[in-house]
Image (cartoon, rainbow, N blue to C red; front, side, top):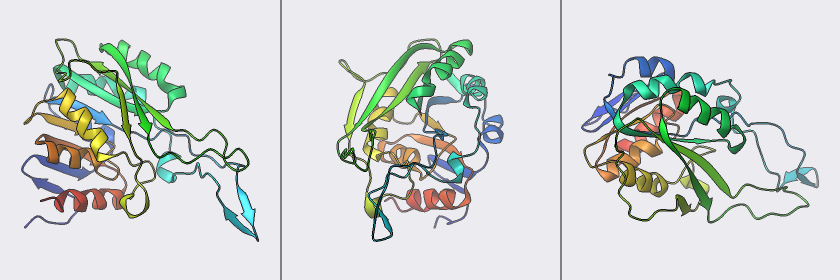
Length: 240
């Protein structure tokens, strides 16, 4: 029976609690087929858009996702490590704040990545826009994909790079910026083969690992936050 500890190692799946920099140092050169990450956007802040009824705040849009999104992360410094661990023809897909995509794309180019493309997740059930309480609620998120030389794996004849999936709500949601498993399954299936190894060093709630197990890919990754790491392990371990 698989242990429910902070470290999980079962066939195809490897999760550990670790810092992304330290974790990547231990990954062998050119051993990864696909990198799929959703790092902190560093956009947490207090907002003035809220409604208070009888002293109770209601309908406000919280932009404070937690301490993990307040901490400074120089994502550009990690890009060379991504290039090192990827196999030739391997792809890196990075979800990130739209307004910070330009320096990220420049860092990818400087590290040697080619064929940069933008991907878009359209949320089919975003928070409805009500200008009296919410201002310009985002209904989409952007990712950038980049290839390490060679011919990349891409299993789609015609593709516009737009993915439409609902956001998690209620009990389904264990992380404030949790991505849909089906979104990550679609990306994994298009950019890798069964048996390939996928890496995520910002694992969060464990979505990438779950998607890998459900699509028959190997996974290796880490999460620094103790609670999220334990939850990710339980989530993967609960899969049949």
